[in-house]
Image 1 (cartoon, rainbow, N blue to C red):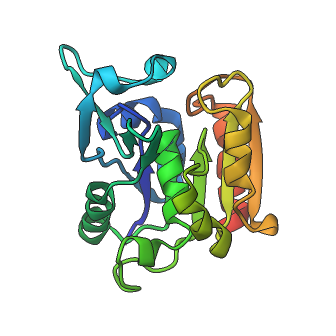
Image 2: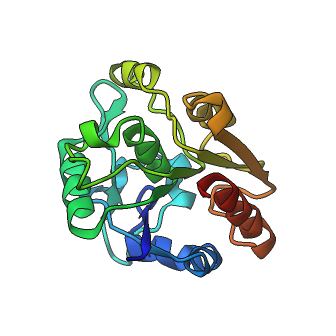
Length: 221
């Protein structure tokens, strides 16, 4: 049975779009014996609700007035939350397509992944048979949820599996403090920070991908 990685895309992207944007990364992972699974978030929101600062990072479909997201904005209270539609979807997806060895996320997908890996079985209502302990987590431009209702979960359940946190020096979408907040939510001797010279994307250059595969080999053997 092949080893599997759950790939969670960014805001307004889709699984197929994320698949196309991670070609070298995917090829390297497949070379290590992994199968990568790219679900598409179940929520659709009007594109007008997306902040203009994020427009460069989204991938809306032609002639579509909707965008795809894992998180729901609360416009009244100027915050956001993880809707039940997302947790139910991820539960069902893992039961049908898993179990998974690791989770890789980009931007909003990395934020969601970082939250659920604090205690994936409880948060997604999965048995140990449906999803055994994860072996790793990779976050590209990921962040720790800011709303107060989520803080106790991070504080009581620090991420204890090996985690890789990647940030771009020119990333203007996910600010450094947000990435560092998720990094600091992890057990100290299990976390690694990598920096690349680009912006808000998953680095696809072979040299950088090699650093990622070397980290994975060192932390999963």
